[in-house]
Length: 47
Image (cartoon, rainbow, N blue to C red; front, side):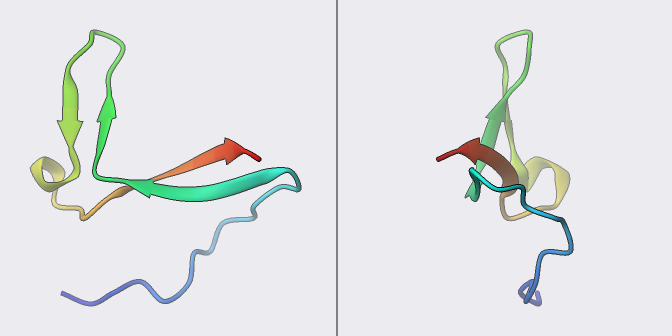
């Protein structure tokens, strides 16, 4: 598996890009990145 060397996504000022191994869906279930063939999900958060 190759690692991603860059993230081709503009990151707005005041935001930070973090990676998490799971996300919680609106119905309360956890979706793990491994279930969809990823290592982690990228999330933009306010700094």
